[in-house]
Image (cartoon, rainbow, N blue to C red):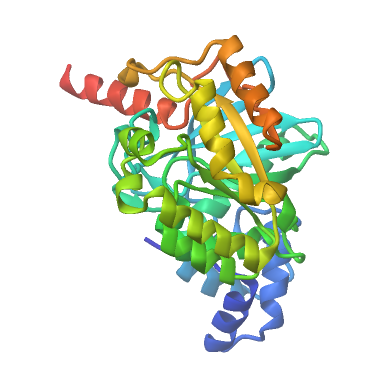
Amino acid sequence: MKKSIYGLTLDQLKEWFLENGQKKYRAEQVWDWLYIKRVTEFSAMNNLSKECIQLLEENFVIQTLKETVKQESADGTIKFLFQMQDGNLIETVLMRFKYGNSVCVTTQVGCNIGCSFCASGLLKKSRDLNAGEIVEQIMKVQEHFDAQQKDERVSHIVVMGIGEPFDNYTNLMGFLNVVNSQKGLAIGARHITVSTSGIVPKIYDYADEGLQVNLAISIHAPTNELRSRIMKINKAYPIEKLMASIDYYLEKTNRRITFEYILLHDVNDHVEEANQLAKLLEDKRHLSYVNLIPYNSVDEHDQYQQSKPEAIMAFYDALKKKGINCGVRHENGADIDAACGQLRSKQIKKEKKKATV
């Protein structure tokens, strides 16, 4: 299969043109066509020579994702299911907020992290997405806006879809470079958040990148015993190692970090756990924010239910009393397959059922 041109940074595209006997300024022309004019055919790039267009067509493709399902929620959330060139399915979610349009992107086909409450891990990882396939998810959502002739744009990105971003680190960095480029989509680094379940060596690497892109940690439990029970990654990188890497990140960047905490009924949602979490974050509370997340139920994980509203508020109050900055995330897309990976899992089951009939 030909490479997605979205996977090249501007510098990489300049280098490619030089290697292929072209002037490097051609890269900026192509970049403008891709990200400002947003064409989807090389033949539409009418300030390029026929030779140049042919060269691009022989080596790259622009579109590799095909929309197969689009679910729209009453609150404006849209979940897209895309089929890739190899037939694999991925999810991308558009969420609308007062501050702008945020897109949640997927970085892997399936997930090997294996959190016991998560729909993403129902299907094991079969491969990483390349940088172009991650970038194209943003372009597809922007295409949705453009088709409606609305003067809207993707303004924020969260890398929190299917997969573990830090398990696909090189492609993640390429993606961030492309979407943040001022000559392209120009999505500000501080409007982008990358979430990790806690791959400790990569947190150190990320701290050394010198990026302004935000970091979120999926912590979900304040003790090793409880976290290992619901997140098997904690067995490889226990809380002590995780916190040491976070201390390094904070010291290196002086940037606030978000801790994601999904509240599971009668599992991790007691005031006791809230106090343990406050203790864990006590020495870094000036640069910490805890995002409390109501659980989206998953049929295959029926041992877990969403915490009751009173338990969520008691947890919130306990953190606040200890001086921890926190908030409760507003639910998006509650009337569609809201849980990450849920739509993909259902579609694959549906296709398997059809195949056996």
